[in-house]
Length: 336
Image: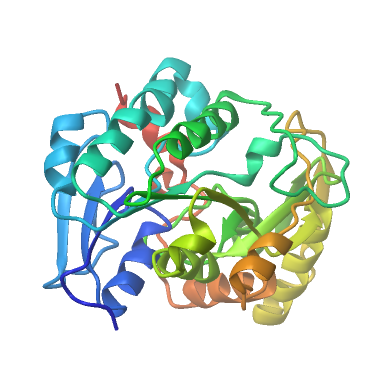
């Protein structure tokens, strides 16, 4: 257990990953400040004596500076997440994902934050035929979302110093159950459709996509606060686990759901065209060798967890409820 005086500010802490991450941080003995616009509410977070929830916009540097005062660590996840949401309003996406990033980093450093963990994305690699895409691979973004997530990385590294340790993580696509659920992520979509439609629609299918279970990636974010400075300072780490084509993911999902819901067998797989050509096989060798980190949960585990949540009635109208789809929620709220 860590000293309770150690405080972590988590931007985007009320979101899909945040609602799994925050309890892990609290259980590890940290005091946690969640700084979030609350686009999706904060119902996924349970009250806790060491949890402070601040409704705030990362573009409001003064508000952020006040919230980060007294914090030892920052885990920065807040952004307009995924390509469709970003493309609703590219200018808005740029202001949130990029323009305010350096002021946020500077405010954190001035507040005495000792370590800043930036959650980038493995989608910065775009399309690559390399058998293993390492952290040294050139960034070839296909969208504004990918571009600006990548452009933030060198900004953070420039501000690194002995008292301010920057760490960059490039996670794969996340899958699995969260109290603030998203059904706009590949494995989660496939599972939702298999359970509730009996049909899985595959767009394209040959694209290679890395995935990682939500319990593994949020566990890594906690550990990212604890690794020695000399192991992580100024470093970039891919964080994935299993690389499969979308068609392979569909077959895996079909198999698990048919076992969990025998009455739904057979589940059909239909394939159609797509304009989403992102494809890359991410290597997570560096994080394994340098930090000894290895995920413990599989894609099949994520599908099983979602099946259990469906059986427990944890979702309301999962096929039509816009709260489960980021782009629909952002559009509905008319964010500016």
